[in-house]
Each structure stands twice: as C-alpha cells, then as structure tokens.
Amino acid sequence: MTKIKRQAVIVIHGMGEQRPTDTLRSFVDGVKWQMEQNDPSEVNVKVRSKPDSIGDIYETVRLSMESNYKAARPITDFYEFYWAHNMRGTTFGNMSAWLKQVVFVKVSRVPRHLQKIWWTIWGIFVLGIALSLLVAQSFDLSAIQKALIAFFGGSIVSFVIGFVTAFLKNSFLNSLGDVARYMTPEPNNIKDRSEIRQQGINFLKKLHAVNNRTRPERIIVVAHSLGSVVAYDLLRLLWTEYNTQYNTLPTNGQPMLDKVNNFSVNPNTIAGNFSTFTDAQHSYWKEARALENPWLITDFITLGAAVNSLDYFMVNKVPIKKLIEQREIPVCPPEIDTKDQKIYYLGDMELNGKQTNKCIEVPHHGALFAMVRWTNIYYTSDFVGGPAQRVFGTGIADIKIDRKSLWCYPGGHTDYWTPGKDKQALIKIVSAMSL
Image (cartoon, rainbow, N blue to C red):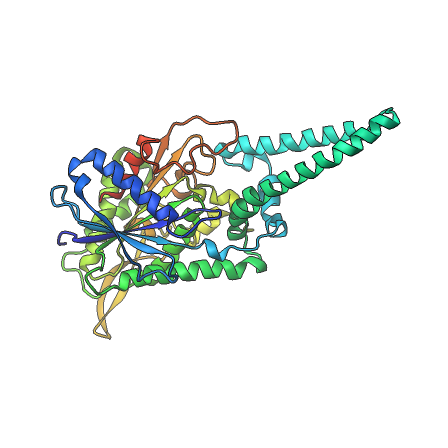
C-alpha cells in the first residue's frame, strides 16, 4: 500500500446542549497544542476552516491541518458529526424506563466504577424519607412563629423549587435525558434514534465516496461520552454494508486475516502480545484495501465513553452476552464461529458483475474489529468513562489515567483534550491517532 497523503478525523460529541463545532474546535486546539509539544516543527503548521461538504447542516465546518513533511504527517482534515439537534423536548416521562433499569437493580449488576453513584442515589433517597418523617411530626408553635414561617418560608420554597427545577432540567433532561432516550428503544424514541443513525451513516458514506482531492485514504473516529455509543452504532451498522465488498482476488492468500483469526481463537494471548495484535489489525486493513475493499476506518478512539457500560445503560431484554454470540454486538477480537473456529467465511467472488468460481475469505458481519483498532481512554474520576474490555474484549487498549475528584462528581469528563490541563490525556489521544 502506498504512503497515505490525506487522512480524516471524525469527532463525535457527547450528551447535553452541544453547539455545532464547539467540540470540534476545542478538540483540534488541544491536539494541535500537544503536537507542538511533541514536535516543534508543528508550530508553523496552519489549521484553516474550510467548507464542510459532508455534513447535512450548514452549521459545521471542516478544519484542515496542513501536512508536515518534517514530521512525515499528511494533510489531516477534522470533521464533526453533529447530532444534538435531534434530541429535543425530553421529558421525565422519556426517562422513566431507563431510570428504573439503572436505579432499581441489584448493586452486583452495576459496573464497579458506577457503584459509588448507585450508593449515593440510594443514600439520598433514604435520607429524604427520614427527613420527610421528621418534618411530618407535629410542632407546638405559636401563632407568631407560624406567621413568620409562612412569610419567609414561601419565598425560600419558591427559590428552592426554581433552583431544583433548573438543575434537574440542565443536568438530567438536557444531559442524562439524551442517554436515557438513545439507550431506550421505546416508540417515542425510535424516530430520533433512527434519524441520528441515518444521518451518521450518510455522513460516513459520503466521506468514503469523496472522489476529489479532499478524499481521505484513512479515517479515524474519535468519540466522547454518549457520542461513543452513537459512534459504535454507526461503525457496526456501516460495517455490515462494507465487509463483503471486494473487487480483486488475493494471489497469496490472506495471511493477515488469518493472523487476526488466531488471536480471536486464543484471546487470552493478546495481553502479552498486544502490539502484535494491533499491528495485525492494521496490516489486515491494508490487506483488505489491496483487495479493493472500500473500508477506510482504521481507528476508533473513545474518551470518557458511556459505551463501556452498554450492558448497564442499554434497555434491552436480551442479555448482552447473547447479542455478542449472535454477532449483533461486535467485540474485539471478533467473536469466532464455534463450529469452524473462524471469524470469516468463504464467499463467492463477483468480478465485473459476473459470478466466478473463485472464493475469498470474507470477515463476518460482527468482525468489525478485525481491522479497526480500539483505544479507550478514561479518567478514574470520570464515572461516565471506564474500562471497555469488561464488555467488549481483551483486544481493546484500555488506558486508565489516575485523577482525583469529589465523591460522585464526574471529574475531568470534559477535560480530555484541554491544552495544558492534563497532559497525560492529550499525549495518549495524539499517540492513539497516529497522525
């Protein structure tokens, strides 16, 4: 495969009242700052805002970073897939099914890094009951005392109610409400979920189909918070359309696919040979590209990712282990077929629209991570993020960064790419992108 001349980074924002390009611009600023710390030759490299011909709204732009020949880095275009405008008008009713699942569940079923939050919620609930019982007791007060309480109490109660209402709206309806609605396939949420996915699939397809000088030869997907779940869905759904597309027959077999397959058969060997496994993934991507497979995405990078707790957050009657076995949920390394111990099957090859008797090894519809490397970066203080290997397999690079915060506050959740605030996070992000 020839040297890459242009690459693209897609940034997918998280939950809440996000504005178009805010996440994109701050992310690029952080990455550029760290690249300058790593290599002084990056200081003179310009980043320019250019029209975004990929997104479906006119609020987004493409931030194009010049190539740097000294650092052997090609032109890098940064895009944002913006989806927040689809999640509007959330009510507490939209959250009821999700809240029941995440609160009214045994603590043993809660991911370890979220158990502290679970205990906090139940502690507040018990304390509220105790205070209610105390207030309910009768007090022997004089008429003047009752009048004063009535006079000042009304103002205080109005203020408290207004404050609590605003807090709940901003913290729950506008943030956790996004999580609840996206994770719950209720009839009221289906339309919004489908529109986000359809817009995202169209976005990725348009980027794959670019045929002018801005065409990328490699794509990196970076997702934050709830955006990691959105991104995961987009990748797994798009993969099922691209995994079977080949236009050239292999001349010397497909050794890199076989190498990844060996790791899938023996996933416990990955821990001691992690770089060998990720090299095999990337080499298989090159192998598939040489066979004219159109898939361009090489890396999936998640930051403070809610996807790590998909088994806890997702409202679904089917256990996630069963979904993995059925290949609906792709894992890393890919799930093997228990009969033939393979992550691929022999598929008939069509050339120039005609069926041939030639066969090619085709990765199955759940083998997304046969050629996509997954790096998951999270702060220990950020309860939204956490280890992804717990659910999705030993082939994920879980990078834990120690950081302190208050008992149940998601410390650092929006600081992963803040310049100078936490150098370790930016170092890991830039390293994972391998620009």
